[in-house]
Image (cartoon, rainbow, N blue to C red; front, top):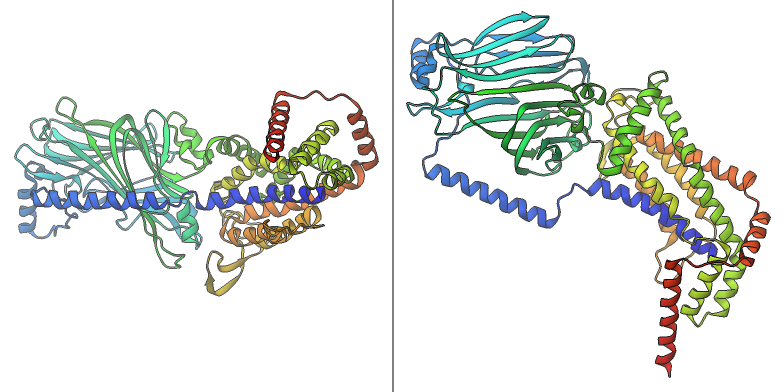
Length: 618
């Protein structure tokens, strides 16, 4: 009977671990209440828009191209924008680039119309673009003193490119006079992804209407970079720093909108790459929106999510004066850690609580150290060995407790037979035996509980570690993505349209491990779940859910399970001695055992329950 309890405890441990896995897969799925709230919010927004239109509110239109060869079109344009017609229209662009990033800034709107990573390519060897073909838009909307509603996307800026101490400085000015203008100033350093960005005005206090708010709009459609758009989309999020350092994210799987205060930076994370806007002076408020564009794992869809931010700006002395930074680059801890004063490292999804702490301060630097002198796949194997060795004392204590339970089996069986008609008395005597022998019946669950933080931290580490991106090992082309060895002509729900090998190996390894530890005398009792079904459930879950996850994660669990099997065999065959354990238990039983407060309280409660039961029979 006690071996059955032992088996159940061990299985419970595994089920707890994989229960955490299910939780992690579904934790971002909205509840029915959240769906209803989102629906209500959307209806409110639509109603508000209709009300604005009914009230005759201005509606910003898409920027219209002007035929610069048509004098009439130019005259109409200048008439529409009023004083800002001082700047001559031009469709030219200016290039800012260093060894890391290429930026193209248009005279029309003064904004970045192309941002390209110079050191990275997509899964199909195309350069990584964060901004391209009109997927992004940055502009200011304001009213003038002559009652015009203008958007900087419709204005032409005059560029001036200079070099200051090896830094490229681009001044873009939308002028109303030679000494009166709205300026966007970009400053690119020679070896950084971060680009300084200043928005200021000069002499416009009589041009811009200071009674109406100025609105900053930044919109971006995240460009696809990975072979699995669903997998990439899972880690594509709008993340932001607000309320004095708090880090939050909009929903991953559905449309989400939030109004936040004291926003320090906004990150449009596209899995392994990010477009980030920082501000020296926190925005008093920001209306943020994220729309999911992915419904299935399409091979042709080009975008994952659509992000939008609407931020009110204030004039200072009738003028604009804001210092920002643009970051277009990899979501890499090694890169973002360079900007500690901005806190951009916090935009990386390390995980929450202690799990994120373990990922950020243990696994990330450990893997960085190992991969600095080992091949990337071998570094995972070595890290796995180190983790398992670190957990080996827990494993040993677990097996030691299991051995003690096995030694106590005859006495437990005797108690079960003696008090088979009195469950309460049987439980009391069993607890007394455990207490005297120094055995914990819940020892099978303890290792699983202790491994949960490590399990979750690794679950977040492998899919989000930039160090693994496009690094190959054996048949896996990319350790940060799945290792497909065969393409299926159809799609299996939850599984996908391909077969990955590392999840299969990991599933086989965990199946054999569970057979070795829980496969004997598998209990099947009325009213209890079928334990054999649970035995097969964990490997099946790993096989299905890990098929679309980072191959590095499956490699870790394959190696981890193999090492655990070897550790278990070593402990059972070379370390534990059941005769010595039996002798030690007998010695423990002879010694007086003092009850702690919890044990005494439990005993008293059970005795009271027994007395009440006896009184009820009289």
